[in-house]
Length: 435
Image 1 (cartoon, rainbow, N blue to C red):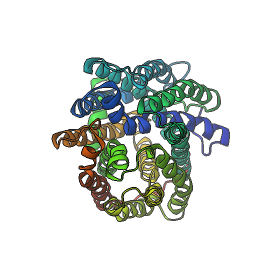
Image 2: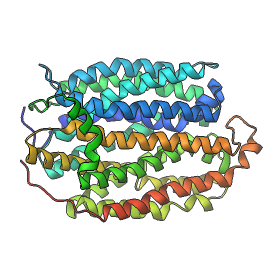
Image 3: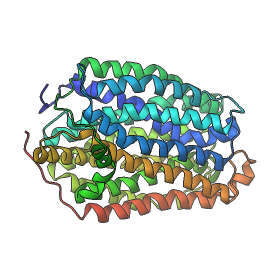
Image 4: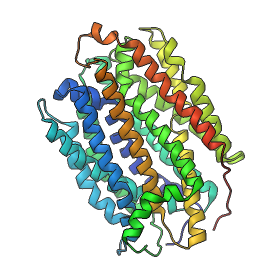
């Protein structure tokens, strides 16, 4: 099949479906896992940071290799499909073991299952990401594709956390019950989403790349060889680190710094619903101007909103709900536009080299994000542990760390927003006509 200029709505829906489940794995896992592994499983906060670091670094190591492998694959069912098929059972097994982990599971067991979980999801995410990055030859259609995937993520978040939100508001369910509910949705949703993808969305056909040590090394080195791609990747690094820091400490911020226990999942729903409204606006700005202008707006607003946690009063549901709405104005837009620009760079590279290297590009981009997530989540949990914070300590002891948690929530997006404004200002996005 040749590359499409425009996808039909069923094709776009099916292409976005796996992103719905991916978010169900990534976002709630990042938000709830520190509390779950400390309060339910029994690991220390520093140990949880180490588990996340090992899992993420394994992901970082695998991403470029997986990108090169998918680019070099040639089968009757396509280049990307075999790897998604191989990754699904691994991801489901890892999800079962982590989301439903029992009290007392050892550090070694948790780490092993976390590595397996990330390995399975790497196969799915890299292959699916490359599929989406190369499916269209049109500049604006690529924004539409990645916008649809981000909307799927935004829809996923309230769907996945609505159940936990209801549980925390009605029965005061603990984090283990919330994780189990989200894990069930992943286990049911992943095979359904992949089935829709295979059934409705065609995979572009192209000549497979030759798999060599050089092609694998290129997956790691390409970021150093293309200035524009390097700038976008560094921006993605800062965005990813900020997101990792904020999601890893989000539950503690809401529960301990703002004295709003049993509201964490509810506010995630509010943020995601706001994203559903704001993302089409950012895509419209991108379409009428260009992606650089839209990104400058996103990062400027991110930096402007960053100091708000310093001034939020304790115990005020309405104040934090408004803040969650404000965060939703930029949440997801930066990912959508940055990934869309990478798709443009893939298209430009294909025009120059005559080779479709979407897997290598997307994997290298994911490598950057993985490094940011590994260092961001592990680093901030180690920092909190070094200061003596313990999620299982009495409430009054945890509340003493309120100021530290507020400064963390402010510093990460402020630094990321300001740095990304500088980076995005250093290049211009070139529109290319449809091939």
